Image (cartoon, rainbow, N blue to C red; front, side, top):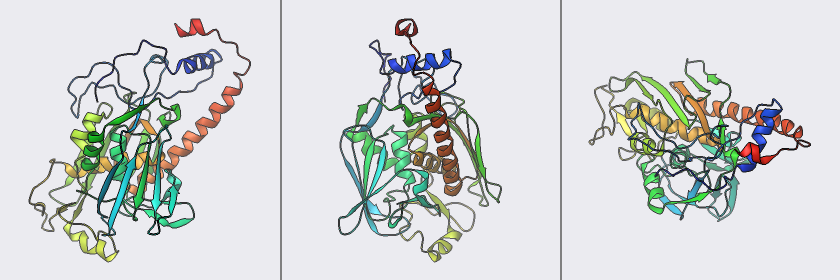
Length: 381
């Protein structure tokens, strides 16, 4: 994604600029969100510990005139393959939208009947080894393993798409998100003017933890251009052990593709029989997962690892997909110790509650502006 020069034409947020400053004049506090994956300024070559990049962020008082945009795909793309857990042949088609409408799933059964599955935390019905969503009151519309596809959409800045699923699972492909990304890059993107409610800047920390000492936390951004992460995992296997993946700057599209998207799902050889006993991983193989040897001395895959710390990078991939269940691009800092789909789902539930509370406060605040007369010219300076 190339950098865009600062627009000199009237900004699509011109009215928002007036609205924000009127709020400030009244002593009210609020935030208006800039479009996702806005690109501005110059970029240097980013790396995982230090980068200079300006994509995805929040509209602030200082950059109110920044050009705003978000994306859908230029064309539909279809993926076919086995489901990791079902082992069945499944198909998913990601299609562009004419107007910006967010991400939505469409489950299609064997009779050709379609059921809309909303993208929100209340749609999550299982977090056992993957994230599974379903339409409210319709358990037959279950769609499993949505996190890799959602992470790919997030990483490529695709905030509006219709995802039609034939079967009860997203195909696992190679166990990462890279094939989704490559297909998106091939067809290209369609630019929209974004809705401000598709970006949320974390205002106050929220945290969840479980009885085993694992925890996940979202807090105000370290980089207001997007999301930063710090994820630590710790496995009792010599080839994994304790690994940490951290970004000091917001995750850009370039960083996502180069450092995260290709990281594959993984498991321990000793856990395979247990998972199959629970009727999971029926479609798992060395072609779509990294399997760590029961002897603790390496992996079974002949090609080796794609990254020395591939397991923790895949955990980050899962995090990005799970966070996108909220349907918004989060501007903030995510940190976690031994996170999983269950913890992430709980965090997203709290996040959605926080977003709703702040929107309600904002709605009440806007009522005070009804009789405010604002001269737009001084405010636009």
